[in-house]
Length: 115
Image (tube, rainbow, N blue to C red; front, side, top):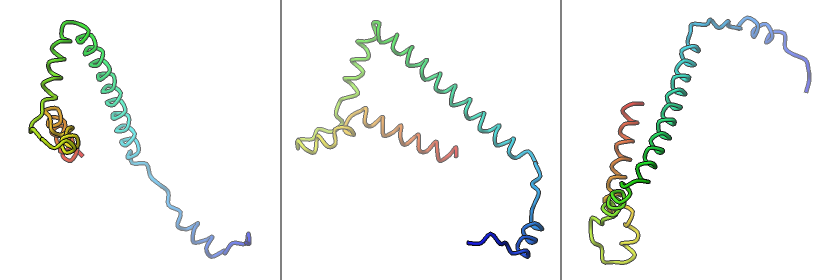
């Protein structure tokens, strides 16, 4: 390799150098990033607070109600006689599975609408 440079190319690059004017775009982007970071942090703090409140509620008399609700959510929607087929479809063949699939669908719809 050589360290020699073509003078014509040097002048072309020197002439084509463009000065970037600041129009506030990067400030807007950084403000958006900071807003998103703040919203994510508040969401995480809110989630932790909800978990703590839920834990306090479950330590009291609502524990029996939560157990009854868990029993109701595990109820099968369709009775399947085949052993292996029942095992394969068990996560979706319950009230909880139906609610979970519905929530995933709502979440994907929300993401398509918002973004």
